[in-house]
Amino acid sequence: MTALPDCFCPTDGTRVPSGSLAWCCPVCRGPLDLDFSPTPAPLSSLTGRVNSLWRYAECLPLASPTVSLGEGRTPLVSLREDVSAKLDFLTPTLSFKDRGAVLLAELALRLGPRQVLADSSGNAGTAVAAYCARAGLPCTVYVPEGTSPKKLEQIEAHGARLRVVEGDREATARAAREAADDEGVFYASHVFNPYFLHGTKTYVHELWEDLGGRLPDVVVVPVGNGTLLLGAALAVAELHGAGLIDRRPALYAVQSAAVAPLAHAWSEGAEDLVGVTATAPTFAEGIAIPNPPRARQILRAVRASGGAFLTVTEDQIRHAQSDLASRGLYVESTGVACWAAVRDGALGGREAVVPLCGAGVKTGMARE
Image (cartoon, rainbow, N blue to C red; front, side, top):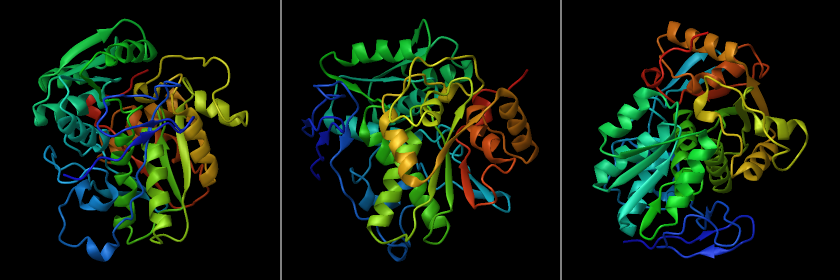
């Protein structure tokens, strides 16, 4: 079996050896990155490969998967002449989080913990629960009160223990991280564990393949904890470094106006979060993250790409969800945020792709 790469802290450089159950930097308690520099395969070598994200084996830090459910390779469909949508709600657990969760489950299976633990507003926890079930790993998922009942039902259906935490998403994260320090626990964090980002990056590898070896002018992604955006930035860097694209797309990040700490920092020209984030209820529960741990990395990635931040109101979310449903696409309220941000021409006609990240059956329609 191929040796696992080491992790390191992007803030202070502290290294964490492969095989460790450590989930954060032991010095600053920040998220970790992976010491891994792949060279993607050219299009010509992809013919005949498995029709899942594992077709990009050269780009992934784990090989020979045993817990795959066929995740990835989701359709790309046109919404209008200049905007296409990638249907990432057509994955095994009906959200893009499957891309990262499968790598976390693979890693946990190799490390052999006594317990896998995750925290989530719903979709990441569902994905981790499903892949742990596939791997035969015991799993506990922490969620905030008020999480969609359908998401709770799905998590329990996969056999995971459910811990509903009083309070918001931040309170849930604190409770989970305290439990994650117990001996023998693998913290399957879609925020702190870098393997998750190396799963989400396959979203962009698929775009590159679907578009015949190029990427659109703009890649638009919803941002709460930023796992899809940071994965996209990884993929763009890999493809450009391997000479497989000659220009990098701009990364546009979308937040709900009700909870927009990164958009606020961006507007202030800051390199990190600014002040205390004001929050209000939002239909986009999946990206309602007041204090994303990778904030500096997210802001840096958007800035380096020549992109920007956009925010959407609750009315825009409702109208976008109804609009997509009228086109045959039933998408959860968080998952429509990117279409809500660009459907009125915010990108000036540049070619763009938006992800539709979660299925509508998870939340139902947003109502006034």
